Image (cartoon, rainbow, N blue to C red; front, side):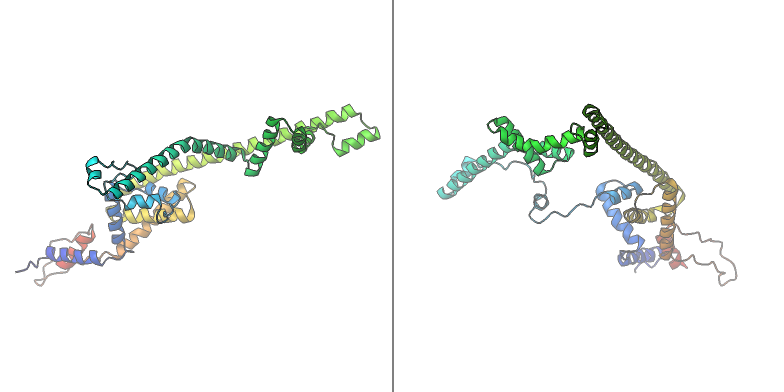
Amino acid sequence: MPDSSPDAAAQAAESTVTQGVTPESPAGISDAKADSSAASGAEPTILDSVKAALAPKAEEPPPGSQTQETKDKPEGEDPDGEPPDVTEEELTALSGKTRRRIEYLANERKTLTDEVASLKPKAAEADQLRAYMQQTNLSSDEFNNTLRIVSLIKEGTDPHGVLQALGPIVEHFQKQAGAVLPADLQEQVRLGYVTQEHAQEMAQLRSRTHFADVRAQKTAEQTEQDKRQREQADIVRTVSDTATKWETAKRTSDPDWHLKADRVHELVELHVRRDGYPRSNDDLSKMLNGIHDKVTKEIKRFRPAVTEVKPNNSGETSNRAVAEPTSVLEAIKQRLAS
């Protein structure tokens, strides 16, 4: 005879409820997150959700890419390992045409391997050069023009070409350094207001003052940028500590935290993606408490109400008190028992 006790019925009902949970429900989300947590071997935290929201989204590798090919390889096969060499016994078992084909492919492979080995140092030098161009803000045209001028100077057979290439550059920096008088000082010299030597000193003083201001401005901008980066790092560190303490407190004070945790983590990640990282502890507390209240309301929608204790047929009130359920399973058991 089948067991019809409340416990058995509750277990059957729990199985039915679990199978029927939609992805939007907290239980469904909890199951999905639990699987991922079990796979990673560590329980996720709010900080993990924040990091996931702040991290750049990885692009899906195109079909045929090295990453995709690595995923498609059988488990246990080293994608970077060298394939085993064909033994003499294996070669002997093959036909002459097949052996020649294998030898040809082996020679081609060795040639390509040698070419790759010879190209690695050149690739490293190219990477260093590219990094230098990015650091100094050099365009490809500027870099090529510089190499052309240096080549003319090193060759030493075309001084006219060197002067033609360097002339505009020298003239530009003569004006920048005050070696060439600007138009207003030239006019004052022509009218006899100042001497040529005095005008030259004024032009150089202007140049030094101007570029001292430019350097000071760049230094101030760099200092401000460094300050903003330090402030951002301090905010992230402080808010991260607050988030960890908040979650630790909820684990202790909220008996349903194990039901809410995954949903809270999900909403934290969505909030950070949409509105950015909280700028202060107050903003963080407001965000976390609001999310916790929202998840609490979601949980209540899936939890049956506590059954009211009514007198039995004999007119006596049962002395068996019905406690507040601490889980969905207990709530189902209480409903079936009543």
